[in-house]
Length: 369
Ligand SMILES: [Zn+2]
Ligand SMILES: [Zn+2]
Image (cartoon, rainbow, N blue to C red; front, side, top):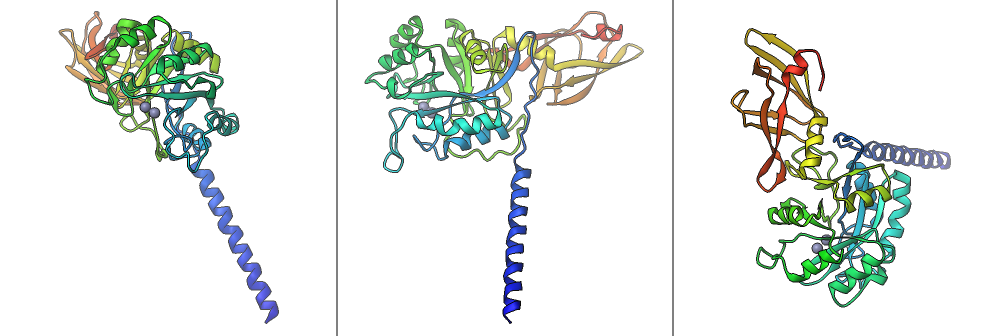
């Protein structure tokens, strides 16, 4: 009887161990990283970044190192954790400690190879609204009564500062005010979030072009990210940074020099000088098959985004959709001149797609583009 009891206990232990092993294996399996396919462009590596997110240390719902795990799973290279400085609804449970989220997330970031940027959200009523300061050293030392002073402190610490979600309190409250002009002139506003989550702010996009400010797009995520895979229809809003190398210093340098694009829903938004090389690095013309007056080619899109081409010239199919990471077979009339199109969902200005040319003849004559 006693022996049986011992055996039962042993079996129980074995069963528990097996279940633990299964759970461990299952969690190991779930921890896979989805790489995001955007090619590098000449001289630069294309880094996928999210510069705006929250943890339990302000009004977020997750512990800081979970943000790093999410970023790793979703294929990001770099993140900034940017808890609010002025809005701490959990402070009854989690004492105010503005620099703590970065410390907690740091070890996990090192472990997983995620570049972790120290940041904070300077949070004031709109206007002037919310601004992120990233690449700062000492968040507690930023705190001041007004945004301008806080931004000055961030600037002194070498921070990169951008205006968050300009239209979140409505179009009227999101107007450009004199304070912003002062901030731009004094180097206290270096960029604007032209996309926040699924929202795209065309007016902010225009301001970035007119005032030469860096375009960023971020999640501003508060709850846990449950996404296990990225698709071109369902993915994080993110900033693509064209950096000289994969390092924190290189990201900061690229941000300071405006080398970014924003991937939001089905759109890629950025300056022509970056979207153009990104298009040509993404799309290749392959396998030409001429017949009579036509030529059939494979247009291969190796990027993560579906690309919609609208015809601007007189010849070629009216619309061509190149699925993400896929090949599309297209028939063109045989001609030596390139086909003229606009990439409808690569926005180089509000409602303005990127003009491109498809030079089929170079492939036909054996050259590659
Ligand atoms: Zn905000
Ligand atoms: Zn926020």
